[in-house]
Amino acid sequence: MRGGEKVLEALCEMYPEADLFTHVHVPGAVSPVIERHRIKETFIGRLPLAPRLYKYYLPLMPLALEQIDLRGYDLVISSESGPAKGIIPPSGATHVCYCHSPMRYAWNMFHDYRERTSLLNRVMMPPLLHYVRSWDVSSAARVDAFAANSRTVAGRIARYWRRDAEVVFPPVDVDSFAPRRRGEDDDFYLMAGELVRYKRPDIAVEAFSRSKRRLVVIGGGEMLAELRAQAGPSVTILGPQPFDVLRDHYARCKALVFPGEEDFGIVPVEAMASGRPVIAFGRGGATETVVDGVTGLLFHAQTPEALMEAVERSEGMHFEVADCVARARQFTKSAFKEGMARLIAQATRAGAQA
Image (cartoon, rainbow, N blue to C red; front, side, top):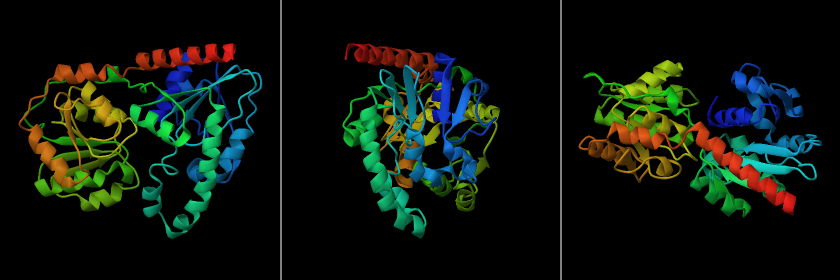
């Protein structure tokens, strides 16, 4: 139940009778709100080890999407960060795409992904993703209206697909978080989220290991073992934790550190909903959620030195709990639903007049 699934959950609440189509569904892996819907897999779900290795079936996904039979539906909503918008909408139906980002590994982060993968993948990626990009651009024409989860993503949609998009920020369950009185021992900084390379958790671990300031890291992922080996005595890496543990650490930390460039980034909003400031790399979605100097600080070089300089500056500043909470409350589930309902109504009216 990450950001994309939270968007799907909110859409399911808006359309409780909707059918869901997906490549792979693992029963019990998503919320009961989603599980109550009729869920249909493409043929990808029947391929060997698909629940674990579905990413390796990317070359087959365009074919699988185009085989989905959507006759009889008058509204199709695709949720896209991989190839999802490439369905063939039936005549007369409205197709709205909620885009978390055009495929990062095919577009803005292609060279990063290729640089960090195996030799075989480095050889295979250029011809494979050349084909995927061509299909991705052509399939953008099948969408009547795009919603982007941030202005950053709207810019990518314009650059790569030459389409306009309305920004509808994703839903954040801000009501599940609340400020609390911090104790004298609550002198740690927090980093939370999936520990993958593009989020740059290594920057935070190195910075806090060098400075000997306390950092607590919550999250799992491909870099967990590597970061534990890298961490100095002042860095505690808890790994994946239950929600209650995460919520407690949000409310008790001095500040959240967020060294990666995200499309939107739900974690900073959750920290602000807990009354805590955010020290974030000043690119991507964090620039649209964190108010520099008011609900946190932005640093502008993705290095341990720049992060630690921002941490040191923050220690001489005062951030109001009320300001952080008020900012977080601009990204509620109800705001998401209102934005999507408005966009879908506009697209439907435009289709009826065409």
